[in-house]
Length: 291
Image 1 (tube, helix red, strand yellow):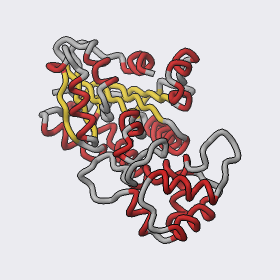
Image 2 (cartoon, rainbow, N blue to C red):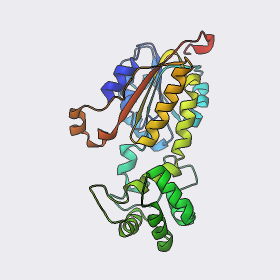
Image 3 (cartoon, rainbow, N blue to C red):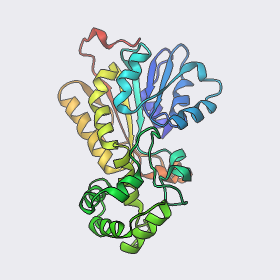
């Protein structure tokens, strides 16, 4: 949904923008291509993505400042660059295509790999530790809350009985035996998503991002967020509505924007994407200028 992101962000040539989930620099480069004297701060908690991203930014590197940071570290990242507030923020939530398709990262059961799932490989907690050390009750609660998995208890019980579980395909087999396929979706899909969210504290990090938007984006600046499942989207929707009621934000998307049929055909994973955008209202804060 890059075209729609740019449409709502409305980057100005001299502006300073924050791509809070730079990944392989897709949105970063698209924004940078609209700038002249401005630049994009490319943040990501995955250091490998940042390194690869710069390789795809040929011709725009002088307009990009890369920082290794999670959502909870964005304020410090801006401070390190001498930036008070930015003219716009983009966040494309969830795991990236790069992470999902690299078997060594352990995000997917499409190929065998370690039970890792860390976006930031410097952190200690892995999916393997959760799978092999959490109690059956905690696993069931995690699968139900983050994966919306109705068969959470059955799956948790099967995992505990199968321990130790060492790889992605091994875990997928345990889940499929406990909860056989009933439709097009692989029975391990929701459990893997729940594990990924838990490993990376994605909901806590998202809440931190949403809570810090007024501190990061100047009055008149815009925030554009892409979500891929209802747990994320509900949080974004509630936060935007709360800011709007407080008179701090003007919501630009009365209803969520969705990918076009052409984009879904070209990029099937985009079919679940939802875009919400809002403009911050200038409350007369003199600190709201970009640096």
